[in-house]
Image 1 (cartoon, rainbow, N blue to C red):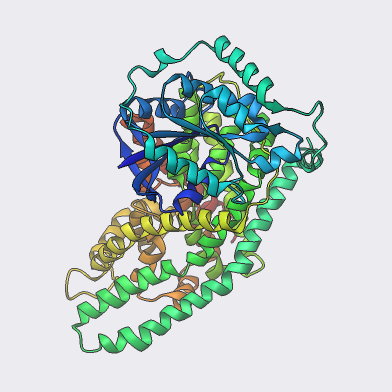
Image 2: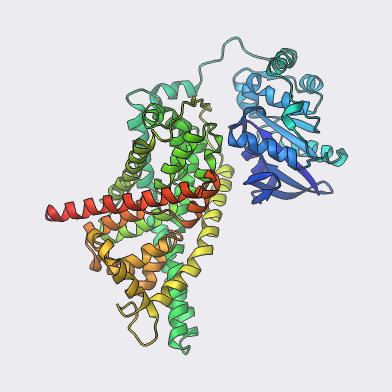
Length: 596
């Protein structure tokens, strides 16, 4: 099997090219010499089966950020047949250094100048034939976003792979690299020989938009307004789809499953219908909401607005011992905390990285989102529900800020913040589809691993030992709830809700499924039962605790692996658990003292 490695700087469209080349058939795998996961896919090119590996974006092969180390270690430990270097044609004068560094390694390589459409609009003209001759490798211009030149690029990769022989892994890669001043001289020679740059770049739409969106006073209010509209849109557009999925699942249960299991033993009927089907079905009804969330976040990120948010927040984050990159990772955590934690590898400073990883688990991830949407829809009016959800996002930021303030002295860093602001771009429908599908598939994969096991365990705890009423104080779940009652009852959390919190430690996706099993109902009936069993103060206290307390098991495992410290991971868990109790206690007792 041949191996093709994609290498390039961040924001060059490398992942877009990877998705178009592989058709989103990617999977995450481990590689020799690399302690992190990389995205890869196996495809057929010509007559060869080719393994395509998407390496992290890097600025310099000499660098010491986690991502730059990953690229170096991969090339040192894994033989490759071909390296595809992907650069932004609009910034070719700054990015050509990476191609020159990789050329020094003696690996068979091709250079793909992506975003050629944007470069042409800027008046940048590149003679690929002359550049290829100067670099000693094939060069081709394309737009991975729109597909322009993609067929030619695929044909070139196929031809190069057919004639190339797999090179052994490089040993001591850095010793083969020339000094920076030598690379600088080669850059000037290549650029002057093959690139025509305009004397003055024309004023672009990006510059005009940035005068408003990056305004010192208006920038942040606009950003938070955009985020609020995003949550409103999720509610307004997602509610009908969510209701439709819930209705469909109820029909399947009534028409197919209930008659099929009518004569089954009571325990089997309860396990399959009240346990597995109702639990999984309740979670499945939130898939439309999750799809919309990821699509909206993909639009914000792919348009380039997310980078602007990091720029706007950098001054504030610096006072917290963080920087704009930390804010981007917090926003990434809204999807899932795990990839956000892994994204901190771009930070060269270990103290900055550790502080950022400490605050990321307070991001309101998509798994928590489905819990809050369900509870807010059950206990709050359609007018107030988006405001309640928005307040939880603000609380997410508040706890992250408090944590950073308290721990910034322990994890102080003077690492400079450098951020590239890409031009504003409208993502294509294909980009949105691939991005949304990958995120939803990841969510469903994680959910399916935990939810079925989780709801079966919840059902067992609420129905055992035999002969006692389901979900009663005599069951194992009742005993656990009573045991934790002295700790959680001051927060307004009853024994039934306590069980869901225990299983939420494994995965927050289980919480709603566990509620369906504990109360023996799903959908609207479960919502009505929650409204009868708790008031809004109890509900908000429960949501605060769910937001802040221990992250899921996958996040804890990632904290441990990325920090390489069990003590650090344990400390992060203990801090979040203690903070959750204090915040929920203060809210619940304060609200009751005010007569609510």
